[in-house]
Image 1 (cartoon, one colour):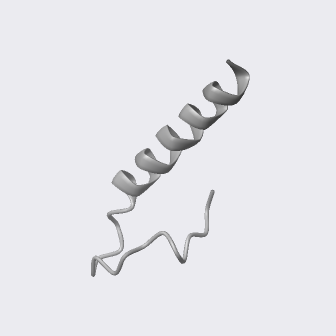
Image 2 (cartoon, rainbow, N blue to C red):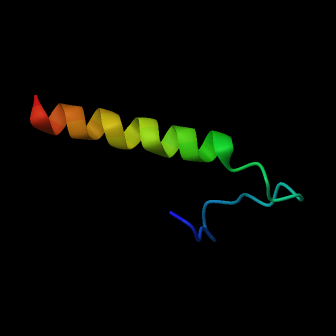
Length: 37
């Protein structure tokens, strides 16, 4: 959870992957819950 090359869409600063991280985490959580349910 430190290196992310394909996660950045070339925002310029590069310090804007927070939304991407939140989206990825939410998707992973949803999938995990779906598998568990």
